[in-house]
Amino acid sequence: PGNQKDEGQAATVPTKLPKGVVLGPDGKPCRSCTDVASWFAMAKKEASSSSSTSSRPALLAVPPSDCPPDVAELGRSSWTLLHSITATYPTKPTPQLQAETKSFLSTFATLYPCWHCGSDFQRWMKEDGNAPRVSSRDEFGRWMCEAHNAVNVKLGKKEFDCDRWGERWRTGWKD
Ligand code: FAD
Image 1 (cartoon, helix red, strand yellow):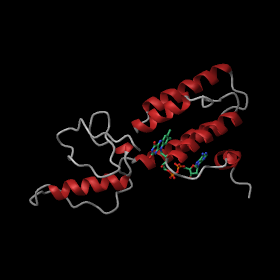
Image 2 (cartoon, helix red, strand yellow):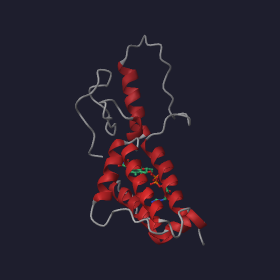
Image 3 (cartoon, helix red, strand yellow):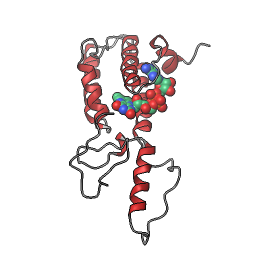
């Protein structure tokens, strides 16, 4: 959001992209940075502007489930992995594991396929009070919940009650 690039597009990129389509560092539309509705709007636009003699098959109204992930599907899978890591994290991690965990989070943000999500996450971790807290399972679980809430707020979603992170990701709901 707010990161859509308007310049440096490759020749194959439509000059006017539908709202929501985010470009990658290569100047081409980035699938894992874009929601599926915007992606399909772009594909539809491309299809209608190409000649009527085109032999390409008609676009499906709903994408098949085995398509590459859009930004939301990638996000859900990634949060599942991240919160599950906190749920199985030791209650008393060794200093070495704590250092490896911090290093993992930095590498994760660098390699995250949605580039603007990863760079915002990296920036958030560097803000005052947001450095990864990994000295126990509960501390790490709460920190991850706060990290997820920061993205929820950015996207205009409801914040999750971090007192219940363990119920959601480790033990199951009490009620
Ligand atoms: P998700 O937000 O994926 O949540 C999945 C489930 O986790 C929810 O159903 C809920 O049960 C639980 N949950 C929700 N909040 C919390 C919490 N705080 N703590 C514990 N559990 C919780 N998308 C963008 O469009 N722009 C971005 O900049 C962006 N940045 C991201 C950065 C990172 C590091 C990651 C991993 C994802 C990012 N995403 C971003 C994806 C986004 O966060 C969502 O995953 C996506 O919008 C799908 O949302 P959802 O409502 O299906 O549920």
